[in-house]
Length: 187
Length: 187
DNA sequence: CCCTAGGTAGAACGTTCGGTCTCTTTCTGT
DNA sequence: ACAGAAAGAGACCGAACGTTCTACCTAGGG
Image (cartoon, rainbow over all chains, first blue to last red):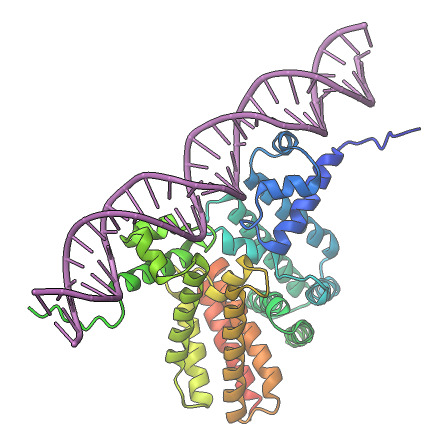
């Protein structure tokens, strides 16, 4: 009865990480204690600390998962098409039920110390996303890709906040129109 | 030696609120315990709880102080001039040393429950600011004040995030240009 | 066959959390 | 002169925090 499943990565670890991610995102990181995560994931304290040296490491792992999801959704082929798809995905995300803002913006609100591993993970992701915007804008022939990328990033951050604290639908269309306007500058 | 100072509001209470505000803003709300606030304000536990029934009340008071500061800085006279001044002030704020983002966005990241008094204070402030934008845009003769206000709000939220996590100077100029573009739509 | 890694189970650590309590001192308005 | 509010000082509460520990069980690969 092949329970093989190869199990290159522990199943308990995955459950732990998935549970923690959902909890951290929905309720805030500091608001959720390790006891909560342990109980809800149905694992033991020892198992938790076998996989993650500390809670901070779990938090970083959570942000890494989100980052990789965004990265994989974006893809490799630089250009206007990828930009449209990436921003379009963000617009949809903002409108999805249970949306509670950007994981990275929220994490940065809780971890103020720039030297904190969590804060570092946030800035790393944001630098990566900014570079992606700039690269795609460059490929699209935008005359000032750096400024346009900063503008687009502000629009996306605003959409993330508005999707959580205001009208998501309005946020989505405003973001879309903003991207169109920026792209229109590129001939 | 008139130490009169009238003292309509307690001096200890003001010290407490000022200290708590600085701490909450700089390090995050959940990251700062009441012990920390009490020690740094140089008051006693009993004095704390005499003025605020719970920590949550202190947090709401902190946000109220910020809200009133923004409101007073904006002023009363509706119109394009007030809008320019208000947004200009935000641009400067974003560039000021020690800037750590918008108090309300950060608070909402930590207090997810929409029924929480803290979360309510956040949405109340945001509704007020959105209404101010819409009123000024209407007075400025904008053809679609509601959409423009939402757009401007997203730009301001983006500037708040970027001022904290990216280049503040770029955030300020991008916000300024965005306002100019929106105002240009109003003839 | 046994070694090892990953898992369960659960007690315990010291610290900090938010909050309550009593007692005393200081000051102000009447 | 005196009542009463505001503040200081500090002990105390139970609960939750993140973390460490020992002990035992199991499954897979050498």
